[in-house]
Amino acid sequence: MTAEEGVQLSQQNAKDFFRVLNLNKKCDTSKHKVLVV
Image (cartoon, rainbow, N blue to C red; front, top):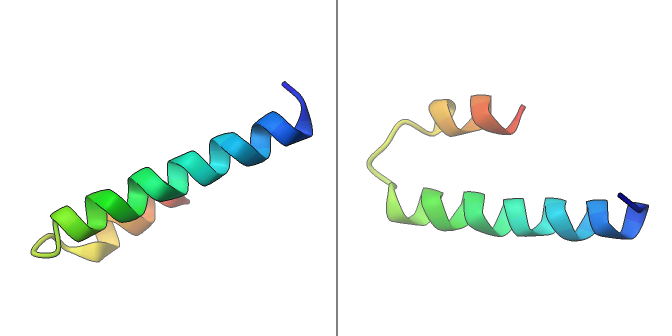
């Protein structure tokens, strides 16, 4: 994997992460933070 591919992958993961947060605003955000770390 190149550095460029890594950046694209991380950006996609961030988009999916925020999309999930927006869909699950009722959920405890601390649970999502654990997944990111």
